[in-house]
Length: 268
Image (cartoon, rainbow, N blue to C red; front, top):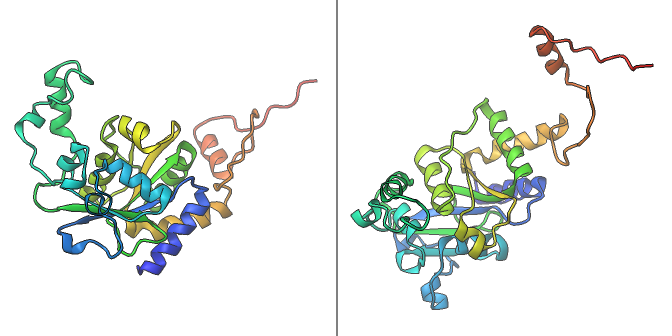
């Protein structure tokens, strides 16, 4: 897939979903030499640090291409989760979670030990940019979507080969949960905006995060076209109706299960 194809397909998916913000291309960087031309680096170019969720927000809302290294991060969880620093014992023991958000230190340690992570030392940085303007091939495509859009994306993932997603969900560290599992498993995932993403990066109350593996993008767009032609697209028709019209395959399966699929006669 060329960059031009990536831009066109990403734009088509964004428009079909009627998204509020751009899907963003996210790439892990092994060194500063891999920083794409034109990327902003917060401490170098703006003289201050960001949380990763904030740099993602500036990419998806304001169109910025932003590269973040350890020294650019204000929040440490992505620094640990992305492998920019070692998972030191004090982190693994859960001290930053207890007693604020976990009632026991043992429980806090449980969360810290099982937070997804990339091995220390493989990557030094991360870069994000809107999918329709990025000048690099991403490792992950990250999208803030509402629940209806998430449903459509899950249907599209299922349309490709019948597979559902099996996701590790948390109310913390959405940047880690959105980026690390897809890289480790080469599979899409769903993540929940965390407190920081909502409070500091403008995630909305009705939003989820869907992370898409780039090589699947052509199949996702092909699926949008197919679903639109077969009554599964957007906008989704809504009706509150008893014994609504069923697709023939649904009615046939019901009959095979011994269900009465004939509509009731109207009462006099």
